[in-house]
Image 1 (cartoon, rainbow, N blue to C red):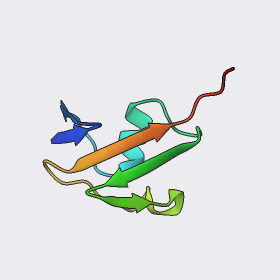
Image 2: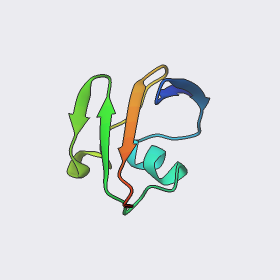
Image 3: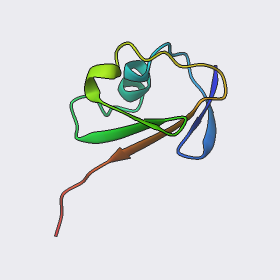
Image 4: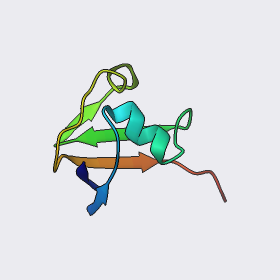
Length: 65
C-alpha cells in the first residue's frame, strides 16, 4: 500500500500504525506519531489501521550535545 511517510510516498506492506513503526525500526523508541493530522497515543498504534495515501508523520527524538 502506498503511504505518505514524513512527506514522501512509500510502498509498505503494513496494516497498522504499529506495523509502520516496526518497519522503520522505531519500536520501543520515544516517538510521536501523527496520522492524517491527528496525534496518536502509543496505546492507539496497535489498533489504528492505515489506508492508502494516509499521511503519517513519525517524529523520533535523539540525544546529543
